[in-house]
Image (cartoon, rainbow over all chains, first blue to last red; front, side, top):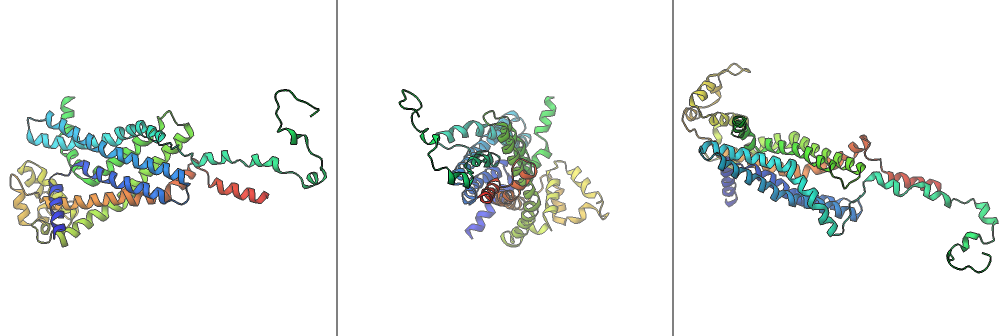
Amino acid sequence: MAIADLIKKTCKSLGENNKPTYVVMAIAAVKGICRPAFTMMDKTENPETKKYTALREGLTEVIAIPAYWACGEAAGRIAKKAFNSDAALANRAEKNLMFIGVCAAALFVIPALCSVAIKPIMDKMGLKPKEHDKTIPQVETPAALTPAQLTPQATALNTYPKMSTFTARPQIGLRVGGL
Amino acid sequence: MIGAVKNFLTSSQLASIAQNTTQSVAVETTLKSIGRPGFILIDNDIDSDTKQYAAAKEFLYQATCLAVYMALIVPVFKKGGFKLAKKYIFKDTEGFQHFKDVKEYMHYRKLTDNPSVNNRLKTLEKERLTDKTKIKDKYNETLQAELAKEKPEKFAYVKGAVELSNIIGSVLGLAILAPQVSHAFIHPALRFLGLEQKDKKAQLTSKLNTKA
């Protein structure tokens, strides 16, 4: 019964004034938990990449929640002050400006805050960004393995030590002997 | 200029979008799909290939979210929430029995938002294009009497139930369902755009195995 009453109260409140900040903050809060959780459950990625991506996703939403609230509320207060002569107009302007504030947060404020704040935080934590799939082949090129392909005949006949065997000795300073 | 800005800020159309969960989320997701990739592209700390890749990935993610939201969440939760509230939660509450579905309530609500009683009554007398009946025919006597009042009853419970259902749908859709769908869709899309190569690691392993 108590749940039904709570739902009724919530519905009444939402029906009278459904602030645009409510839904975006709710989405950001659940996203902040679920997106990193889904990333960590991905078995195809390596653990370091998963940790980096999950933390980055979590931080984005942590920044988004207060940003949505602050932009919405600030815009609403500006509207109240600007249209204080007419109560009906002020009420409508408050809702509209709150919505514009939320839109501004989604379009500029959050991406700007994220690009300023996330990198230093990740650097402090000692986490480096992952390289996307395009760069993986550049690290492990098949060409790097070709010198190891020796013909079996050559290796069997050449029983004498090669000059290259001695290249480990120091190449600087005074050398004694013919090698 | 100031007048135009003032009209925009106090526009009833904008207020209706701002108070409607589905419309405001759709607008916000569209803006995210522009803003986030835009900021990635202007970041000077990343090399151009990575920037292109990350921006395309972010854009595709937001676009998938919007598509999932509009295709699944809006119709299911909007209609489902109203029916659920009417049948179970608000079965003894005044308001729900006057309306057959959400569409009918939203139309009534739009009429109540019009401050002029004369305009409201004129609208009620208009004919519908679909079946040539008058608009007032779909409203019962109680609703017609309310619309003739200076301050008609808006049945906030009904609106609130629809919005609560939409908020739950938006959260489930955008935070849980859309990431799953986008996970399946984004990588093939990026490969199609030539921004990601098909499982290079697996290809390299198979090459090395062949040589060995």
